[in-house]
Image (cartoon, rainbow, N blue to C red):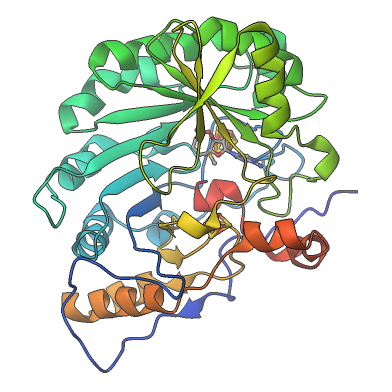
Length: 370
Ligand code: SAM
Ligand code: SF4
Ligand code: SF4
């Protein structure tokens, strides 16, 4: 039987230490494995209107499920203040996520605030958002006007019955497709479409999805079902390795590998040899990419995570609400990154036994935002 209670916001978070030396940020901070800090993912809500079977299964996230009270969430002002410190340490890309980020009221106001930030080289931030697409048709234009540059849309099947079974709230695939087109028309492209592949659930949709998005401006990416959180009943048997996905598509529509756009890109890129565009595969399980991981994550209630699979976050909200100065916040963030040594996926590849030991304690995807 599935365990009912999942502790998302918890007493297990660690305090964030302010170092004695408040040296100002230099625009470049490296962790113990010499990885710079370049990306920040911010979860802005723990709520969602979907119940994807691999993320927020209905049996756990039911009507009695306790979401965070509004007062626990970081305010837009707090988020923008934190984002400013991260940008000063070298962050160039910010991704808003959740839960479903478009459920957060007045999200356009937050986007306007973040769009004003520039990187240490004076360039505009790469400001993007991951969404299930359900509200995109309605919101795309306003998001673009607020300063959002791109969106990534999650879509796990083209077949309506399969899609409804994956989102588990009977949401129609046509509405997400409409959202993708609205986002493209609003100028939020190139749009990445992310499909999580779960064996026996939607793997038969790999080819129809590839055929559908071939010869379109959108980039389809396949994600291996990951062992995030503790509620999705993950099992290696449910994972279709990326190499197998590439093999299946390539057998019908020949593919050739292409170089990454930048170091640390999570997706390996493949192009159709006949010029029909490209696909990506994200091998989070079968091929660790920790070596180039430049991502920090900020949870809905202001805990900082230096790895998606971390068991504990660092309480940045406490510092914000205790009235610390920007110099103190910045120094604390810099120091946390300097001591970072996370490489969970790499270690998992080396020793899969480790999974069993950590599975019960990891944070949920809907809380930390993927
Ligand atoms: N609700 C938004 C959405 O679905 O796009 C944003 C949040 S969602 C947690 C972010 C991404 O994580 C989605 O693309 C989703 O498919 C992916 N995801 C969630 N659980 C996953 C899992 N167990 N394995 C792989 N990807 C997962
Ligand atoms: Fe919601 Fe996204 Fe998780 Fe699906 S993957 S349940 S849409 S947060
Ligand atoms: Fe980065 Fe952690 Fe994922 Fe490795 S396991 S790529 S360190 S988030």
